[in-house]
Image (cartoon, rainbow, N blue to C red; front, side, top):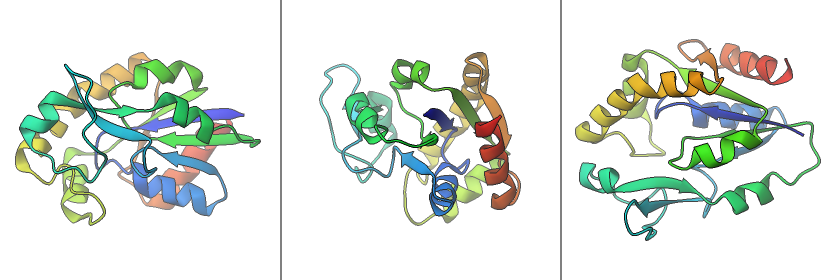
Length: 173
């Protein structure tokens, strides 16, 4: 199985792309959407504080990381398929990135991801102005970090069909 990790800051299109890939019959794991796969974990104590519905403040986000249960992720990927896509951004992703064949980095204009965050109804992450400022600051360094790990950039300032075609082409290249 070829495993593709698709990442990007909040609002770059991970969830939308995940839904589109699922419609096309691919095995997709959206780490934010699978119950029990991730939890907010205190950086100092390791104590878990719930999933994506946890009320988030700047202080909470500063003290916690969004952590993937890697064993759970591996079980979800234990399928007989040609290609599997995992989409997300996690505090411990450096621990599992080596098991992926490719990393795709979703990028768009900050105005685009900011507008997407404001418009979405399935997730409140980033709606708080202080957290949105953190996302913007992280955007500036995250792309460099992922490109240094070999990530292939996918521009999501385009219609979703064009983006998904590009993602599939990159996975099959």
